[in-house]
Length: 393
Ligand SMILES: *Cc1c(COP(=O)(O)O)cnc(C)c1O
Image (tube, rainbow, N blue to C red):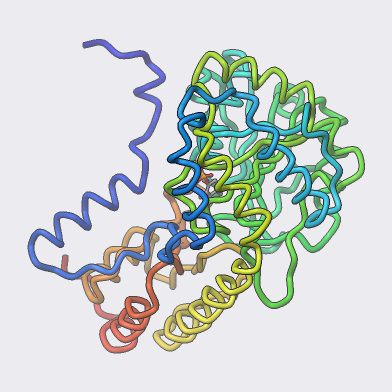
């Protein structure tokens, strides 16, 4: 069978590869701890599950939902944005449910990009910022993020010809994989850049709820002038332990949301209403649990940072998201350090290069495994990892 060329341009999703490697080792009886993937280990909060159970037995909720979303869902998002971020939204025109932000990030490309258009994507970054544009036959251009600029793109360093060809820029803070957060005027400068070059900012706010050390993550839409040039994806996946539910919303620019709705009426038939109503429960009643989760991740962060520093790795302490982004020591690459840690400690982590070429030289540890497993990982690191012994894989 001859496939479309774009399929050949898509890489195999990195975590599919990690999962295969882990499965092979587990089949051989090796107890691998998976710190490779970011997927909360805790269950979804009970109020949310209870709403799903209750509403799922209501036969009036079994039909095709509308793509627009129920009034309850759109109003819950609107109220949440007002209370949490101080951002006013119109639930009629500025809010749309998406089946997880991954789906939304991928499909919004078809609304904005023509073949050959440029899409700017932060590097390292969530792989869909590059692969979404590829699926629209557009040209992703990676903008490198540097530690000395707090992993914020250097907008003035972007070639103005490239910026003029660009129709979209993908950013997301708190940032996966680096854990970087915004504590300066970057969002103001980004909005100014988008006005100057007439491009759409897509802000991926997947980790708004998960921050540490007193840091509170903003919405990009709280920046003056943002709504004219931006949409934001807010996901319930990470903050409410709802990764399997596929619940998120895109909010912001009404014209973009309307065009996106038009596309989505031709792609899917909306989000199952019991999931929408369970998401309402999350936003209206389960927010108190979010801080408890932050405390759990923060404790794990500190345990793992201590263990990694103990064996000579320069682990930073991020203020957001659920990862440690660790530079590899001299003499190593991301791939060799990943292999060494898998061989010596039987811990799977991810090679920073999986998030883009600028991620080379780093590895990513996820904090989303059960405490006992994290403690076991800490023990293995302390007892077995020796960076001076070359790998024997
Ligand atoms: C986990 C993650 C997502 C995916 O969120 P879903 O709503 O579950 O699709 C999006 N962006 C980033 C940066 C993530 O880490």
